[in-house]
Length: 135
Image 1 (tube, helix red, strand yellow):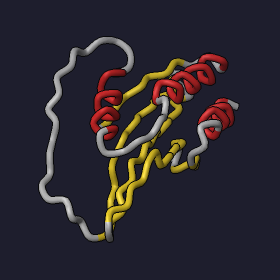
Image 2 (cartoon, helix red, strand yellow):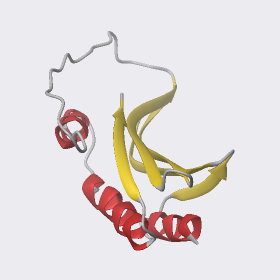
Image 3 (cartoon, one colour):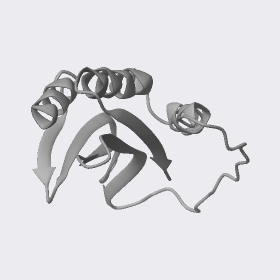
Image 4 (cartoon, one colour):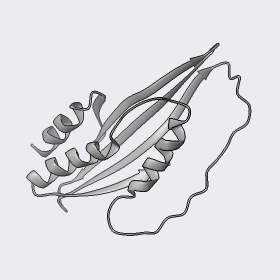
């Protein structure tokens, strides 16, 4: 019922959906670039965990870059961030990180639409959604 509704909501975004040990994992490759003998991918992943007892749906989102092959780029970087804690999702963080990756990749993907679809499915079954963003 609720799990099926969440899976249906996620499959509408065209990625891979699978159940892993009590969670629902959604993975979608947003962009890929090839440089000489290297391949880099930008991957969005959402992990959904349903707590039936509390009637809660926990959503953890990540945006990562994976690579394989011979790396021609040197150096590694990081980005420091500051934020205020407020109730609800940290919309800015995934948008900021997507903006950083947007300098390397060209893609269009609405992260908020995934979260909104999950919220609608959860609300229709009397549950609340607690989003989290992971780096």
